[in-house]
Structure formats: C-alpha cells, structure tokens
Amino acid sequence: MLASPALPQPYPARPIRVIVPYPPGGGTDTAARLVGQKIAASLGRQVIVENRPGANGNIGTDALAKAAPDGYTLGMATPGPVTAGKTLYPSLPYDPERDLAPVILVNASPNVLATHPSVPARSVRELIALAKAKPLHVGVSTVASVQHLLAEMFNHAAGLKMQIVPYKGGAQVATDVIGGQIESLWSVLPVVLPPIQNGRLIAIAVASEKRSALLPELPTMAESGWPTVVATAWNGVVAPAGTPKAIVDQLNAAIGSALKAPDITERFAAIGMEAIGGTPEEFGAYLKAETAKWAGVIKAAGIKVE
Image (cartoon, rainbow, N blue to C red):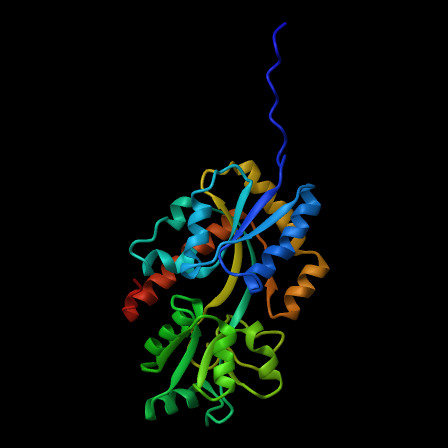
C-alpha cells in the first residue's frame, strides 16, 4: 500500500519568533510584545520575543536577515540598522534592501529638541543664535541613532557646530541634561515627556511633520523655519527576504488589525507613539525614501562609523 504524501500544514503551524535587536524594556521591545500578543491571539500560535542587542541593532538585524524565509522568524525594524546603516557602515554584514522583506510599519514617535531650563532660549531661532555665540553640547542616544543623525542634520542646516555627545541610551541623556551636565538633547518623545511636563526640561520644537497631540502648543521644526529638519523614530516588522508573499500578506493583515485595537492605540498614544499600519508595499516605499534621506545627511555631514 502506497503512503499518501503529507499535505503542507497551513501557516502558522508552530510558534513564531520575533527578533528585537535591542535590550528588553525599550520602545521597540514594548511594541514587539504588544503586537506579539495580538498576533498570537489572531493566528492561534505562540509568539516568542527574542532580544538580540548589540552594535546599534546590527547584530539582531543580521540574525534576522540570515534566518529561514518561512514566516517563523520576524524582526523589529528601526531606522538605524534598516535605513541609515547601509550608508553608515561600509562593512555591514547584510543589505537591508536585498535581505529584508517589509511587512508593516507599526508606529512612529516624534523627536524633540529640548534644553535645560537655565539655557536662555525658548525657540529654535534663539537656540541657534545662542549656539553661534557660545559652545553648546547636544546629547543623543548612541552613535548612528535617529537622534544622532538629527543633530547632524540640524548642525548642517543651521550652520552650527554644536558638540554632539553620544550616550548608551536615551534615559541617560535626559538625566544629564536635567542635571545640567550638558545643555540640550534630541530625544524620542516618550523618554522626555514627563520632565518636559514638570518643567525639568524645556521643549523647543518637534522634528515631525505635524505637532504632537501630547504637546500641541509645541511648534514643529518646519514651523520654526527649518523644514528640512524632519525625522521620526519608528518601529516596523520585517521578515527575511524570500518569505512567501501569502505569508507576508497574512502577517500584515493580522498586525494591521491589531494596530486598530483601542487598547493598542491608547497604549501607544500614552507613551507618545502613533499606531500606523499600511501595506507591505507602502512600508517598502517608506524604507527606500528613508534610506535615501539618511544617505544624503550622512554624506553631507561626513559622518563615519567604524
């Protein structure tokens, strides 16, 4: 009697792993766990979040790029390792455009320019005038972060030479500015919202296309006269290149539905993030535009990272 060939099991047939290229507890990790819970409920399979930090997100992203393209290994994408990294790192062990398949843009958060209360500037123009008159420092979270690139972008656009001070994380930057060790910072909004609200930091402007609902009185950089100084921090989901389109579309639908859930949108909004969504194709186009933008900034500023 001949054995019948086994029919392929419908996807997903086993747990799904999501690689987060940063330590636990940060915004990307939080987004992965929130979305992972919704994927698990929707698809009926466990979602395991695996933190693989190191090299500004490049280690975890490289692990994802080299994973089997079967839909069982996904990864969280952020600007550094997925867009800016292609230009920043000559020896990057993967090619983001070639080795990663966009699934969906999960959320975005504005970046804020803020100062210690003792700094005698309450607008972008006043800060520029001050920075041209005396040396000023600006803290950023790690080399090659969006905040680092924003600082370089602002310096270049305004003709400044503010000394950029990279830290190992955004929380330490905020602590040092609050303590008066340095004068200013670029930070993602969730990190600095509480000290801005209680007056320990003075917000100058947001570098997003529109004002933040959490700080509606705060002008954008464009409104302040610098329309080219625009960049948001964001998280997305990507898969290894070659993952079947049917699986990518299935994941996109599951995550897109999760991003519309009130508990997700409210949780993101509470920490200064906006749920986004959209198609894989829209996310792919966004990644290409971001890659081109950061390549221009990096080359114009002469940024080099070993």
